[in-house]
Amino acid sequence: MTDADGDLVDRVRGVLETDPEDFRQRAEADAETVKAELRDGTFDNHQSIIGLEYEFYAVSEGRWREGGDAGASAEGVAADVNAPHLSRVPRRLLELIGFEKELGLHNAEMTTSPQPLNAAGVRAQASEVRARLEAAEETTGAEGMRLVSDAMWTVPPVGESAREYLTDSVEDDGVRVATNMSDAVRYHAMANGPGSGSFSVDAPHVELTADTVMPESLITSIQPHYQVARAEDIPRNHTLALRIAGPLLALGVNAPFFPPDLYAADATAADVLADGWHENRVAVFESVLNEEGAEKVAFPEDLDTVEEAVDRVAADPTIVPMPVAEGNRFDDAFATLRRKHGTYWRWVRPVFDGATRSAANARIEFRPIPAQPTVADSVAFLAAFAGLLESLPRRRHPVYDLDWQVARDNFYAAVRDGTDADLSWITTDGVETTESDAIFDDLLSHAEAGLEDVGLSESEAESYLAPLRWRAETGVTPAGWKRRRVRARLEDGADLADAIPAMQRTYVERQRETLVDGTLADWTDGSLTD
Image 1: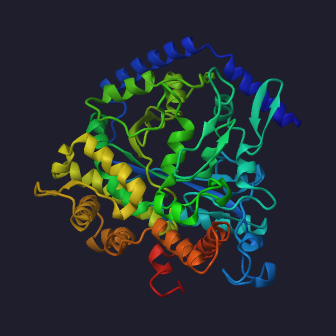
Image 2 (image 1 turned 120 degrees about the vertical axis):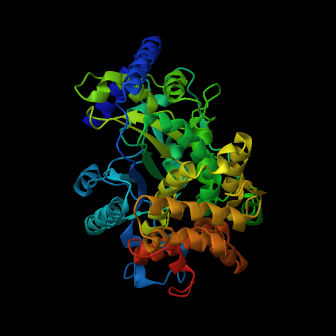
Image 3 (image 1 turned 180 degrees about the horizontal axis):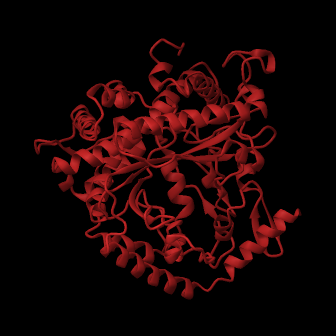
């Protein structure tokens, strides 16, 4: 055991010794502090602000890139040899590229600088992502690896099975530690707290159970942020974000397959294609992190007041009562509530924080969207989300009155079927519809209008949203692209153990050519051979 491992065990033990009742009481007191600041207008801003969290996983580039392993084409050699294998990212490398650690040792996360929601701000978000990714590619490439923007990895590290990688753990002095997890204390503590047990994935034909939450590291996402100008508008924006969650997720689905060795032994390829969902990231996140009596990951109820948003975080079941160190930041005045919010894993969630009083903000974090094939695809979702939260309230769009249960049904229908899902919507003229063309046209038209409202030209707004327009018109999503490639491989006589890695290799090679200056459309319209 290394010194670092010993320090982790000590920190986990420190968490386990935290008094849950004291933690709860401090969170409730912090909630009152936040509500007092809300009444004083501390969390109000003069304009809306946007930001983005963008997660990646790393692959060993030398195993699959052109010029490596005989330089074979994407599907010209055995997939198990040439597929892009998952790779652990050294901590020093994350520090060099300015990315943050995430759950798994293979993960890296970028958080953009908040920008005003205007033409320059949207451009700045897109430029920052591209600039930081280009710099990261140069650095990681020199280390023989590459960051991949994808919703779920499917090929484990060389010489390991996915099941081994996700379930391997050791017990050190009574503390269970996942071998391939970063030193994320709260996640390690979840495997050691009262009532902790096994963590299983519940998805069609998948069998995976672990002693830790490590299976959650299968998935990656993008998370657009929208800081409201007035904190009292949080409930309205929260309600609208729930209504648009299903249709936007339908356009973004990107996780139709698991690593092949995680499927049940009696599951056929036909079963997996017929029954598998288009966005298994949702299934993984919910089934692994939810416990009996503690539904941490969920499609949340509507909010009536901004104070209710604060109270929900305070009342959320506590799985890990993390100790909180004293500090001098503005939000250290409610540090326990802020810490508790770190495990408030709703698909749409309100957040209250800020390092200084002048930087205090109230925002909506939109969590349904998986990581996308290219930067332009990802920025399209940020632009659409921000544009919709500008346009729909201004125009008093009637979808605000869509029944909550219908909105929830839309979300899980999108999880299962992507753009083929049975969705319900209310158009701008008050007409209820289930026609997908009408739904996506109304949705994206209002997103464009919202972007124009904040100063983007018509051509700029159209350009940012073009990747989503193309998906709505063609019905092609990243998940659909993956399913077609796997199906074609199966029809040629391959099995899942070959077809999924072959698809993954092609995905990564296409992304290598288009990540910073292309879209999913470039993968299918003839500019690249499909």
